[in-house]
Amino acid sequence: MNKAINDIFNGKGIPRIDRDIGGQTIFKGASNKPTIQRWKGSREWMVVEGNNRMRILTKDLGNGKTQIGFTTDHYDRIFDVIVEQK
Image 1 (cartoon, rainbow, N blue to C red):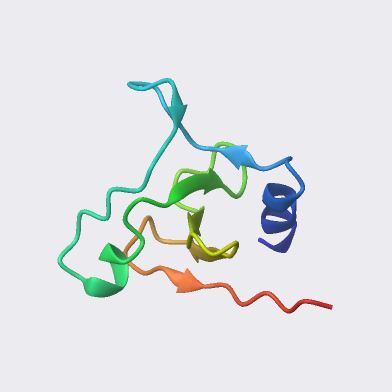
Image 2 (cartoon, one colour):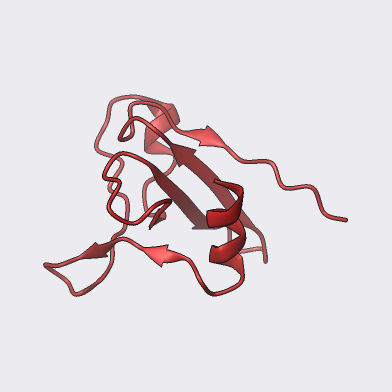
């Protein structure tokens, strides 16, 4: 997971591609859970190519910061990632 997150910020992440639009998949947040809906509009990234359950989400907060989350159970739960700056 750490490697995949670092790869995203180093320009080497594996975007999840939406074949209908031919570009990176944008998370729709189709759930009644507020904890899931708050990620609506996030970009979807693959953790391991070919694994269809694990994802990383990134959301531009518009203030120069990026919110990062991940799921290991195909969006039943999304966990925040806390990045410590050194």
